Length: 116
Image (cartoon, rainbow, N blue to C red; front, top):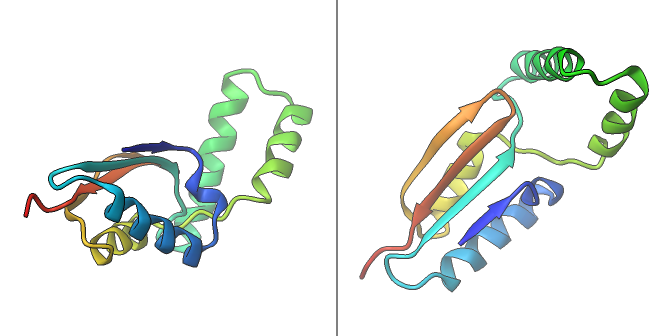
């Protein structure tokens, strides 16, 4: 089961509930992977994530209007840290939970339902 760039719109309790439902829906040995926007583990790192994001999209040609539009959409985002989300996946019953890739505010993480 794969999710991409959707779960960050849920509040933390919604994320935990969704992870429990996903874990329950997996067949034994099944895998859940989430490619997602994440929060920095500290306020300072979260600010740094934003600085890097702003610099990168500016380098790619986004103008002030485009960036303002993105920031307006991002007001509705509710990202959580990778550590929190991996803990919630483990609490939902998944094993071998890990972050497989992370670059600033984008991460790919998940786990596996035990084979029995």
